[in-house]
Length: 512
Image (cartoon, rainbow, N blue to C red):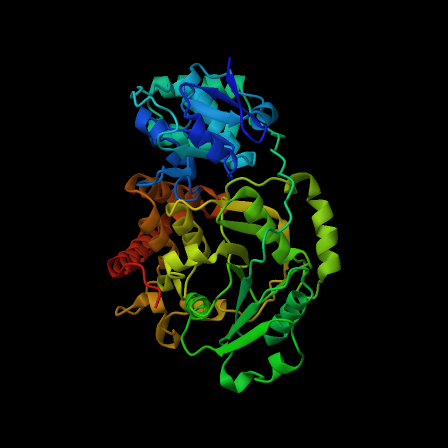
């Protein structure tokens, strides 16, 4: 493309197409975005809805966010967009294998966001044009997009969803399958050099724990060895009184204010919320009780947020081989992933085991949604809620932890009770006033709650189709008939999960 150039006051070259508001761009260039567009007003909002066939509820950016003047969006209008020259040259521009330039731009934005560590942003009013453009994506381009970005199974599933009885679909599928293949070795946009910490920001660190006091003590020692130390550390301990050592955290002095809260309520969401209300740090760092962290952990969380002018980040979580490994093992494991580790971009997930958020945004959310207690998905919910505030949430490859994952202990102790049926079952918080009896809801009702809370009906429909197709086809051929016979019961379990999800939806978000 023949793009125009604009040089910012800081000396960076921005390439662009269309009528650009350079005053607004100057502010954006100092932030976390790499590509900017105003495509929502130009007909591109939620364009290419077929992406839901692949992403369903597992990709946060399937649907564009509503009611925001600035947010992550990969739906680029090729006639009106701007991009850092370094990003354009790294990614190599649009892929001309597509029939029309609209699909080229959508493919470019999607690949940049999902695979290449580049953050594309919608910015209201950055481009003057509000002319609505009709979006025309041919079946051939649609299958080419899927073939180039996903494994072949997803194209086959799209053929099923769009109509395998249609000759036009088969023709487009065969064309793309025979002519193109999955992209490999996509270039990653390297991280920016991290700036030194500006000012004297303070950090509060929150550790919920249960049956893991020895692991928590090791983490406190790691926090004491930080280059940039937290000012506050909160340990919220739910270990039953009969099985805990109340003196363990006072066994040594720490160079920060340590507050131990003996939790009376149930659930990790409630645990974090009990500490959040006491936090005074400029940043709140969330961690699990079974992690080990190197000395630059907190320092690099603050540095990346300041360098990119973002609001939050999600660190790199490395799974240990066993629960006895230490920071030397973390160094070894990081060398093994060094070739694929170094990118930033807008995060695709959020983990309470390793994340950092400016306190002002945690306060706006008022903490975690306690509807997730006893189940799964609270991490993703918190990350999505931040994005829906318009907060930049980055993948942070600089702050790493070793996740020990011991076989016992932790807040999943309560959640494991959900697998027990009959009289021995202990009621979970999400069961509310309707205890589970003889049909166990699957998937987890709290995950189903998240799907209903954050994603539209189209994505939920695609999720249901994919869930049952996967159940039927992913398994030994010898048990295929058995899976067919189990299908009615699986439908009952699925609908039971929806039942509880809708009851949680009626309650709404709760933080207390």
